[in-house]
Image 1 (tube, rainbow, N blue to C red):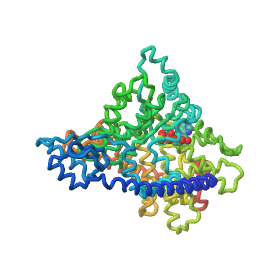
Image 2: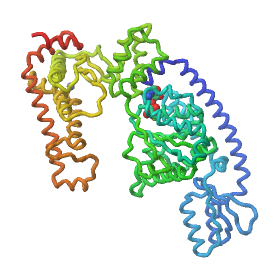
Image 3: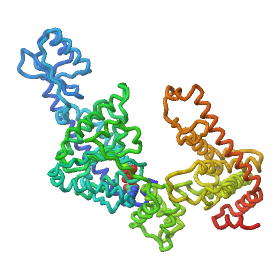
Image 4: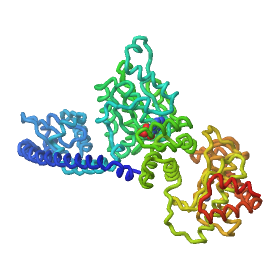
Length: 602
Ligand code: ADP
Ligand code: MG
Ligand code: ZN
């Protein structure tokens, strides 16, 4: 997608390239100046440095008065008893060194040990120039990433985007959610109004929702509406971070927030730092430090400070409960996938800057995209623009958008691929199998299109009309879904008396559904309404020694039954199966009307 987008705005690319080149030149100049300064500094420091072995010797002679260490830095300032001037020593391993001094102190050696928190400025002259080449390399990489449009992910602070132009109007649908959040906007604008009344305004709001549902967008919109700075950070940044850095990043983030208050602090993917604190080992400890720091910061600012912390996650169950306590993220808002109207609004918003032909029917596109997120819909419109360009259309036509939907859901059509007649026949029967079976299943939606033109990795596909957004799916519906999924394999078995690898995806999906039915939705009569998912082995023991086997048997029964039902249905309607396969071999593609017609003819 990124590639295509880039093609779209070559000008932007060129601009970025120039910025990159200029930045590089500037960096090089800094580097040269830096090396010069570093060399000068070094010359001066030479008389004032103390070799580590010397330092150890002085310590053992009880000749050291004071040692000052900065966390993260290897430079120590040493004051010797018989000298006025402080000296600098390079400590190879600061932890070992601290232990050494502590032992000395315990044994009566009067050394004053001062441990200073890391200060970036203090470190500048010492280390930055010695790591300049690395910095330049890193800068180069970041730039290359940015040019590929991947940069946003790598950003810890949103320095550039302190004030956002996003408004609630840019967020389609989500009316109830916006209504709930308007209070926060009001609070940011007129905090006195609330504090005078002694009202306790939320400090933190958690946004739950799948990726692409608009959590970041709505957070920005709050900042935009309130006209306050938006500073953000992503939890995923911390996963590969060095020990101790996570906590200090959080501290710095809030330091900055206090300076900029009133403001919004946005923590994306908070589950990466805020997952349940469990054991005290390895990576966990690091996460805990970061999480603890976050809790400390949130508890630290009073409600007068008008900082609102918004956080987003798509894995609420992972979060440490401590985050949800009053005074922290005590308000949670679920951001759902858009419903029909929401999708239509999103399509409208994102087609504003695109040339749409009059024949475009956004309503029907919205109908066809149940379950899609805002980000996916935006993506579809971008794809549609590319498809239209490829088709040399003046404007984006309805077909272009429909093609884009298919491109996003099934993959790119591969008309050029050469397929043997044998494979074609197999695909035709496989797809006809799906289509015919679902036609006779009351809960399954109508067939929209059947095709044996390869798309993406699929040899063919059967597209169904989407059913309008339902909150619940019944057991019968799930069972019938299994039958429809296995209809392809069943047709292969029945007609060709052999089976192929073409059904692998169907089988994967079916198995997942059957497993969820048994272990998540309590739909097995034998095992009852129990949640078996994500349980530790010892927890599973509660349900009996052989619970694993029993679950497996139930899943297998569901699949076997569905497969047999599919075979039965196809045997019963063999004439339709043959007919659909025949038309498919002729025309490669059957649309809804043609499909229905075949069932009406006698
Ligand atoms: P999330 O943070 O939930 O992963 P984002 O806010 O980053 O999702 O959404 C990604 C993009 O998708 C947005 O920049 C916007 O273009 C589009 N989008 C998502 N939801 C909506 C919506 N409700 N209205 C308009 N655009 C949306
Ligand atoms: Mg986001
Ligand atoms: Zn299939």
